[in-house]
Length: 195
Length: 164
Image (cartoon, rainbow over all chains, first blue to last red; front, side, top):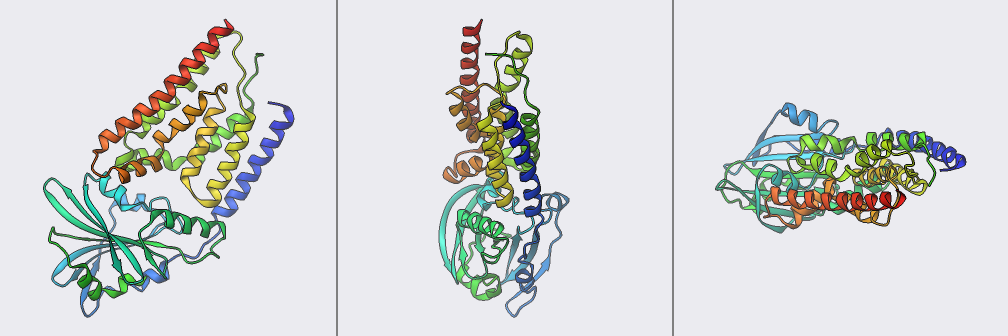
C-alpha cells in the first residue's frame, strides 16, 4: 500500500467518523406524540401499563415503548408498540422474536385492517397455541413488510426526517390460547389501528 | 513477494469496523437465534489468526493490506452510519477482515460465507423456514462458515508451499 493511499485512507476515515457522528446525533422527530394518543381507557376497553423487565430496559435502550395489558370483550391482550427513532436496531420482525423464544410458526396469513393489512400468526410451543397480530404503521398506512419498514426508516435517516414520519411496530397477543375474533377486536379498539 | 509491515491505517480501519459492529457482538448474548453466531464468527475468521501465526514464523511472509478493500470498507462504514443499517456495517466488517489476508480468488467465496454469522441471514432463514428448528439452521450456518474458512486455509497453504 503506497504512502499516498494510506494518507487518503486516513483522511477518508476521519471524514467517515466526523460525518457519521454528526448524522447519528441529529435529532429526528420521534413517534412519541402518536403513541401518546393510544388511550388506556375507553368505552370498550381498559388497560394498564406493564413495567419493562431489566433485560428489556437494556435491550430496548432509547426505544419509545408502550407496553400494556388490555381487557377487551372479556379477553386479555398484551399490546406492545415500539418506536425505534433513536435506536432502530432492536426493532425486529416478530417472527425472529417468537422463533427465538422457542415458538414454532404454525401458519401466517394477511388480515385486512383499517388503512392496510396486518399479519396474523398462529404459533405453538409445548402444546400451547397462541395467535399474534402485528403490523407497522407510519401514521398513514398499516403494512406488514419488514423490508418496507427498513426502507422507510432508512430513507428517513438519509433525508434527516424529511421523507415522512417514523413507522412504529405494533404487536398484539392474547394472554390465553382462545381464538380471537380480530374484526371485533378492531371494532372495540380503533385507536390502536390509527397510530 | 517482499516483506511489508501491516500499515497502521489497516489496523485503524479494522478497529473502527469492530466498534461500528458492536451490535453484532451484543446480539450473540441477547438474541436466542444468534446464540451460535459467536462460534460461527470465530470459525469464519479462523484464517486470520492462522495466517498471522504462520506469517510470524516465516522469514518471507506475503504482503497483505488490500487497498481496494480498505476503500470499500470505508464506503460501507459511512453508508451504514448514515442509514443506521447494521447489515451494511457487518458486510463492511467482512471486507475489513479480508484486508488482513492475501487476496486470492477463493476469498470471494469466503466473503460470501460471511453471511453465515450475520443476523440478517438468521432472520432470513427463520422467515423462510419457519418450522425448521433453530439448531438445524445454526448447523447449516456453521457448515457454511467452516466451508469458507477451510477453502481459504487450503488455498493459503498451497500458495505458501509454492513460495517455499
